[in-house]
Length: 175
Image (cartoon, rainbow, N blue to C red; front, side, top):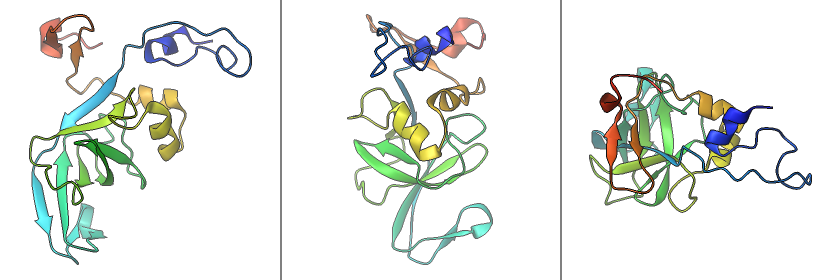
């Protein structure tokens, strides 16, 4: 049993919720969304090499953008099939390095430097859910959650107010 999983909306035990007849746990999950912003974007002609050591090649004219989230500080893995949501559209994450990831934003013409990117969302209309991310990465949902590191700066939004506090406002404590 893991009561800490309730903080993220996961049942504390496999039989505690759902079809197995267990009673539901009525908790309000702490994590609602994981998002960042697009960094530098570039348009590359077909046949251009990119990525670590030039190991990837564009198959068409492609717009790529970088985000400041890699496998050392986020839920991302250097694995094919991952997606992010940019302006309401899922886009492929084509490369993941230690500190950054590269997204193919070709099919989102309005995306630009500074556009919001959702990596994880409780609302499927705004991005991939925890279960979807875990499935694409062949991991359990709790494994995805524990991969979030303290190296990131997190903003905590209070549900019932417009108050936004950044991590630095908590005296440097990592939660």
